[in-house]
Length: 192
Image (cartoon, one colour):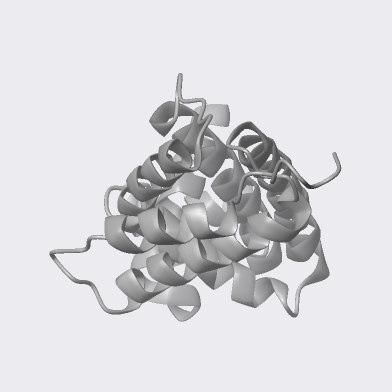
């Protein structure tokens, strides 16, 4: 049963990533999962239940993807952080494109659906805590202020690539220029 549930949720993510919120139906999920009609609705009786399951699964898969992509990476300089973020941007806009598009679709839906908002906020808080730690390790003296500057730029780069795919997508120059400008080492004259 757990395998079937994951199969349905992963198919729903694919449908959502490729067809948007309007394309997400129980019938479309059944077809994408290669299951008989009614399989998705047996597991998720309503569209809201399906959306809540999808939101949980998106958070779970994204965490797993980030852990895989960045395994063993501990950025201790702004340049190392920029390199990690460049790889991550390529990954989320390339190999995991459907998942990222599904996340953006569900984020918009969460504006009018409080249970989705809670799930995504909790997942986002874990990512934020992880990224703040990376900022500190990379030399940030004010990660609470600096992290949103970098992550919002990262999100914008990815969103533009998803909306208008460029086969030569190269976020390296922008990210490697931005990160050291935002993370400035503490001056010797500044109090600690």
